[in-house]
Each structure stands twice: as C-alpha cells, then as structure tokens.
View 1 (cartoon, rainbow, N blue to C red):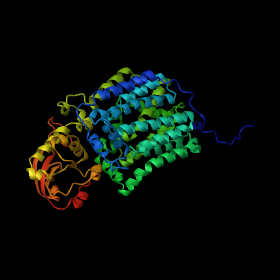
View 2 (cartoon, rainbow, N blue to C red):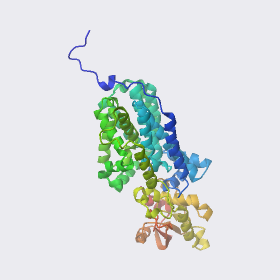
View 3 (cartoon, rainbow, N blue to C red):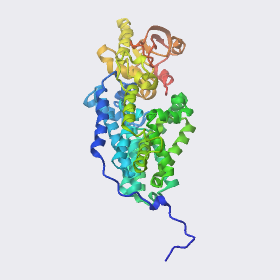
View 4 (cartoon, rainbow, N blue to C red):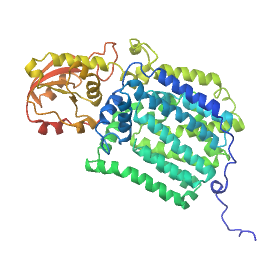
Length: 512
C-alpha cells in the first residue's frame, strides 16, 4: 500500500547517509602529522618556558578538583610529565603529540564525510599549517589539549552521522568527559552540536540508549569540578568576565576577522567555503549540523565577548567539508589556486615565522612575531627574572634575609622562582594570582618582603596598604628589549607589615 498523500516526506538527514567512505590515506596523512610533530619538537627548547607552563609545574603539585582558572586535568598531566623529566622539552612533548594527533583526526573527519585521498590531504595539510594549531602545539597549555579533544568530538559526531554506531555516542561521552576537565568551554561545543542535530538532523540520536549512558559519563566527570567551583564561589565565572573584559583579538568586532588570521588568511577560504557548502550541497546535507553549530557558537561568543579560538574545535570539520566538495566538484571558478601546494607551502613558512621561536632571541623584539603572537614574548627572560629577584633578596642584611618573604604579582613569576630560585638560594615565592592564591599564604615571620610589581613605581601607594616602608630597589629587564608583562616592573623591599597574613592574604587575591 502507498502512504497517504498527506504524510510528511521523510527528513533527508534521517534517511540519507553517505556511502561507505574511501580508504584512509595513512602514509601521507601520518607523514604530515609526523612533520608537524618533528618541527614542534625541534624548536621546543628555544627561548624558554611560557608563564602558563611554569604555573602548571607548580599547580600539579597542589592537586585539586578545580582551580579558579581551569579544571584539573592539565596540571595533573604536567605533574606526571615533570615527575619523569622536569625539563622544558619533556613538558612540550605532549603538546607536539597532541597537535600531530589533531592532524590525523582532521583527515579522518574528511574521510567520514566521503573524502578520498585528495580531500584527506587538503584537510590534514590545512590543519597542520594553521597558525593557531602550530602556536598552540609549541606550548604545553590547556588550549593545546582542548583543541585535540574538541576536534575529536566533532570527528566522532561526523562518524556517527555516517554509521549510526551507538558505540560512537559512548566515545563522544568519554572524550567530552576529558574535555570538560581541560576547559569548561567544551560544554558550549557539545550544546552547539546537539542543537545543530536537532535543527538539521539526523535526530535519531535521541532514541539511542547510548546517549543516556554518554550523558551520565559527562555528568559524572563534570560534577567534582562543579562542586569545587560552587564551594569557592564560582571563580570560573569571574575569570570569564575578566577574559571578556580584556578585549583581546579586537573584542567582538574581531571575532570573525581574527579567525581568518588564526587559520592562515588565504587557506581560511577552505573552511569558509566548507561552511557555505554545508548549506548549499546536497552531498553535505547530513553534515549541515556543523554549520548550525558554527553559527550558533558565533552568535553566542559575539554576545559574550568570546575569543576567536573558542570556535577552533569546528575548524577541522569545516576544512574537511570544503576539501570534500573540492574533490567532488572542483574548486569554484577563480579559486582553484587556493588548494594547491604553493599556497600550503607559503602558509607553512609564514606560520613558522609568526608563531615559532625561529629567530635569535636578540632579534625577537624587532620582528612582527610578538605583536602577532603575544605568547612568544612570554617565553623570554625567566631565568634572568629570577636572578634579578635574587639580587634584591641578597641585598638584605643576613638577619632580615632569614625571615624575608618573596611576593610576586602573577603565577608566572611565582612559577619562575619555583623553577630557577633554588639554585639561587631563594625561598619559595607567593602570589595571590588565580590558583596560586590557593597554594598557601606566606608564613608569619615578621620579616621584610621582596615584592615584584605593581606595574610601575606609582604602585607604591597600593603597596603601602600592606607595608609601612616601601622602597624600590630595581626593575626587571629581560636584557633583549622585549616588551612583555614583566619588562620594567619595579622590585621593592617592603618592611613594616601592617597586619598578619591571615588578614592581608584575602586582600591580595586576584583573578585575571
């Protein structure tokens, strides 16, 4: 019997599935991933630690279910690495491996969209030379692991659309559980993907028992961190406000333009084309949810003043969508020159010059890299910083030195003293910045304090809230003329503490 004429036509996203995917181009994909990993490892020891890496070294020795600025997984991973080898290269090995694995996940996404060898290589190559991917892969940071996990979640969602294998929903839950313990931002990606599937389909994931199991996995993984946040007044929300108020990447007007810069300017055309084709191509109809997720997150982060890289988990899939369409139908007229080896090569060279420590450190201040990639400037000068603090500490009379305390303005400075201070005879440093505030307050020695910061000598009035005698004794100089957060900061000797630390310490608590 035929269906009644009034019956609604079936949703194409529910009934149409891509055909069996082509073979995976393992050799060239692994070659691209391997080249990226080798390059990142080859330059990993140049310049020095980033302030976040110095922070993670110490945070991992103070394990908690959460921190004011992040969940617990990356500090714990940092502790595991430094327990094996407390060196810069060792700490950056995981970052290089995460980035290389992201190349493979990007290629697999293209394959599960129906992309053959060319589409897989176009996608893997675009991901491997993406400036944000390379910059993140150079550092051991939350962004590096978050990028891999987010890209993997999106790949698993694409694969589920192709196969409807319930085990993939469980895999999404497991990866999301890890991701939420790296960055709470992962929750927004999950919500956007679900919303995209509800809007454009396929919607039959709602009928899958594995969905409930995956949700339980995610909730179970998130609860300890959320309980910690609740018990400490939800500092992550205050952190989000502080980050939004900083106005990096041009604020709201820069959300889309800076994505173009972060994805390689010319090669950014590939993911933009892929986004458009998720709405225009019948072949991409099952993957339209990716476009919906991107649009939803763009609107959300415009409203909340989010950063351009908050959308980075979707970039590999959008690269893949563009590459698959090019392989299937050819590039649009006038754009065939973009997905070509010369463009990829030029992008790779430009990316290296703007994101990696390829210059002599004495040249860095005269290159465009610090302006484009501010993190590069934050990897220079930490041993010298510790030496200059040690000079101030050594200037104290021996009797005062025995009871002196070191107070610094941020976790990077405190982490630098932790790393380089012991060989200089320095005691541990204390800071009220972010998670460092929770690592303990100074002892009640009654002695003087060597203090780094505020930013200028005008900060003396601030310091006099805590000490009666405040005297500058020097200023931080990285020795290469590089304008970073520490350059020019005054160093003080402060005496006459006005109250016990039990009273003063809460007043030094800062989030930024």
